[in-house]
Length: 307
Image (cartoon, rainbow, N blue to C red; front, top):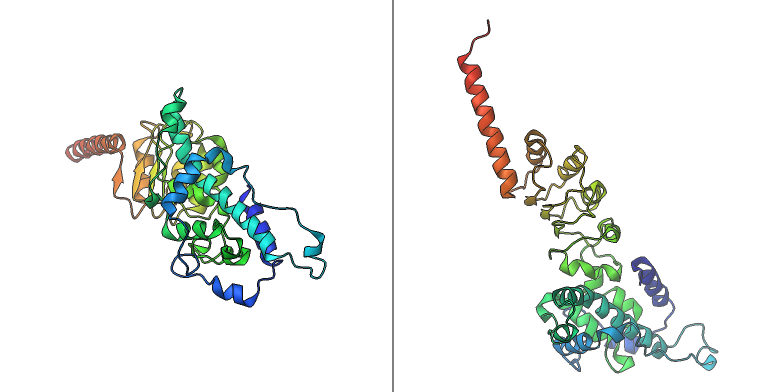
């Protein structure tokens, strides 16, 4: 399920399958990533099916043994055989999409699996329309109605936002705005430039270190607009994380750990953020106190002459 590997596999079979001209034309993508035919079921139906059968999604397969006679006359694999792979890939993608929601439910009902099982699936509005159409297309019951690997790569959702194929395992970004306790393994996701992150909450996450802020500054400086670092006391008290934060030029909202850096260093960092409009109340209060103390010092200096 590795992203680049999955994408490489998809690109490989895209060049392997031979799609007849009539079929290629009939599967032309329209609107948001699917064929111009009435879907057998709605995305809500698909979501309910996947939610109730989540544990089986990683093991189900509609692949079938390949008969040597299928390829004896051609080096290309038959379309109906590869259509099974497309369906399996769709199931895998749905499972990856639902994983963070399932984890939230499990954490909310720890020790009560019966209550967790009664929780409804997420709303269909949590998922962009191009993604909905693509999944419905990939999971059609009739293999001839599914897209080819090339058509999956060319769909609107896969090619967004930079009009280039992206690793399909990047669907975790759909919930990148949700508060979560980051784990050390999540750093590898931050180090990927695609998809660009817009909002991240690392509140009270002990795993977040200076490396995380460096990665955000390197890969997401033009897209990240909201960042919560409150309670992230594994960050060093040096200038390194503040210097990385100062490179987040799109940052509008920032929450910092309380009493972690001196006010002057924080002020220097904030001055370098042209789009910043909101900071946490503790930092704001500390900066006001520092300002008042500086005003008092200036007042004293104004009234005192050097001897």
